[in-house]
Amino acid sequence: MTVFQDADVAILMADYVATDAAGKLNAIGVGFNMMLPQPGGVTPPFGLAVTCNVPVRHVGTQYTLGVELHDATRGRIVQVPSDPMGGTQAVRAQQLVAVDTPVIPPGFARPEGLWVQHIMSLMFPAGLPLEAGTYEWRVQIDSQYMTRRRRTFHVMGPDPGVIVGGPANAPNIPGVVTYGVITEPEADTPGEPEQS
Image (cartoon, rainbow, N blue to C red):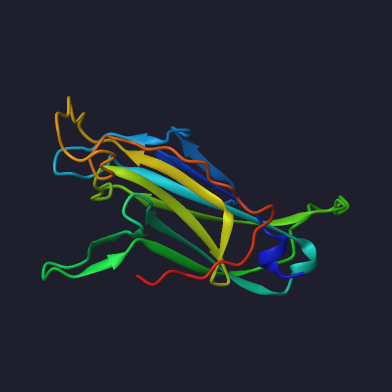
């Protein structure tokens, strides 16, 4: 089996995330799924952490671990300003991960079924310029989407108030949400990367 097939991935958002010298994740303010826009149309500062665990049988191999932000409301990868001339770039990060032998303290046996963990932690200290809507972080391993490993959050918009007239079932009125049933595949299947 490949790393993609074996990987156990988790995604979390917090007010602050960092990986310490011992390789542990430190996080403060974990567990939100809504953000209120700040003055200037940016989100509050926040952090993102992706943990990826793979079985020790993959020791000696490498894989790429990536994460990117998708605008689920508008159906595209999020682009943010990248330079004063009006250029933009996708909100994504990627690392090449070497699966190394876990360090076991002297005098202790390696446990059966031990997994090797890698943590990717990102901070956005100035927030991100996101419009009101629904967003999701999507993880990739070796350029294949982990289709069942997504982290959804919402940037809140103003209450539209009472709407009089207009088209029936208008899908693009801010603050008006429609619900549907989404079914997920039973297991992660390779997804094709979207072009930004």
